[in-house]
Length: 147
Image 1: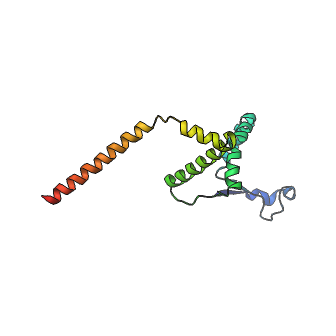
Image 2: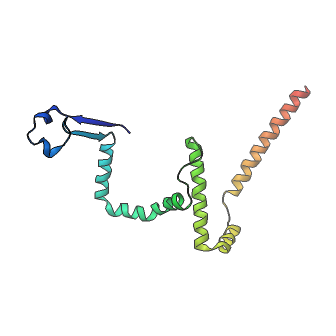
């Protein structure tokens, strides 16, 4: 993270310099490149403290559980697509464990067995189309070899 340092030569002649700084060269101020964004966020937080508190109650314990209790404090993969996939799997496991705690294992299994997925027909269609394309490509390859 980069920051910008601010200095002024006026400190050298200032009569109350000792109240401001003990540095011989005068006062030096560091300002982060993100200082404006931090100030904006603090202002939004002050204006909506109850909303931020509610967010913390709902969301933050999930990440705390995953990071501290499960030990997932970093990803094992690189690249946005892979990291998103890894994160999705971790969230899936969290949701399954939560459902097990709320419903119990037996009731969760019963609900999964009785679940009527609206996606089954789509999955079968995609599988058939993919298989058909593969079958046609195989036939074309065989025909070109035979010719």
